[in-house]
Length: 195
Image (cartoon, rainbow, N blue to C red):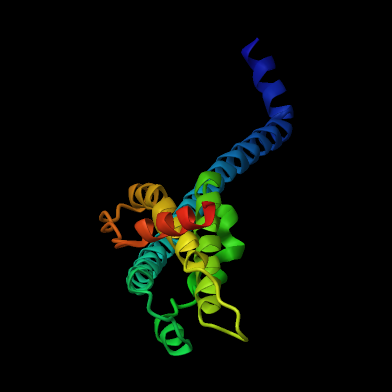
């Protein structure tokens, strides 16, 4: 009986070796696929963290600049001082640099962050456009709320986004932005228009 089993195994030796080799090949392919997917997930997670960290830094700087200009505009509005071309040129917040370069990679970020990031930059750009309109052109003049409204939205609405980004990248808490009298000026102007 042992001899028959030995003879049978010897006859099937090549087939068994091929079958065992094929099974080991499939096992290696599955393990390798899992390792590659895990490595790819980690790479994407790290890339998303790097994008969040870069945008976090830019948002902190931009919101501080827009808050600073909002304080200046509010002071001018309280004193009823004119806002001229020179003031606008000297105090124009800078154009976002990183957002435009990273916009095609926003899909790597969590959906909740993407909406808030895009909302911040939309308010920021609207504030920049509003500041340009404050300088009198061809006899037209706009209320300071053209700038202050979007500027306040950019600063105040980004607070929650910054807290979430800080948690994701382990950054220190960004300081709060001081809008000065901007809110009071906006309320005052809105009351004037309601009358």
